[in-house]
Image (cartoon, rainbow, N blue to C red):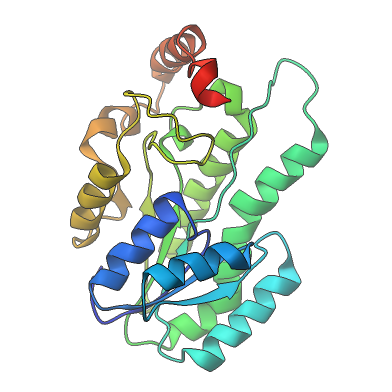
Length: 256
């Protein structure tokens, strides 16, 4: 994608990867509009980045999505990039009953949110000379994390939706890309300082470099092997990965 001269709306942009992307694009001179559920956090990010704008959004609420889309089109008619980044990652245990409210929250945020947000803005994006929809999935879309079964499933579903969305928009001005992050040391679950997690600065630098190209999927080099794993023999890596994670969890002191 072109990294400059854009008007960019980012969901889930008050912390972690979303905020990092917002600030990176802002530093390149783009008009960036961030969103999140808490106005205080939006105000904090905007104060640290003069010229950035913000709109409060509840990505789980279709009415909020429609209202924000209307406001964006009215206030920022040159809007041409949508980054669907908002997500939550609660733990679960698929070997027993899973709280239905938690399941609904994950799917509504991680899957329905991007679908609804894209739907609310798609006709506007088609009218732009060049547009991008950028969906944030995860490495666990390819190799699930068993202790986060519903989260992993939501990201796998968003990956396949992204593929279909890209194909159906192939003859329009809208390009569809996907970022599939590895384990990055953010507060999505807990910012732990665990050395196994990729540092946010390193992830951002490599991701921005790759976004400047034409790749449909943005995957950092450290997880290419994992990205290539799905297939008839995928179970070996899945089993070894999840056994390792259960045997070597994030230390309790860090995860508290």
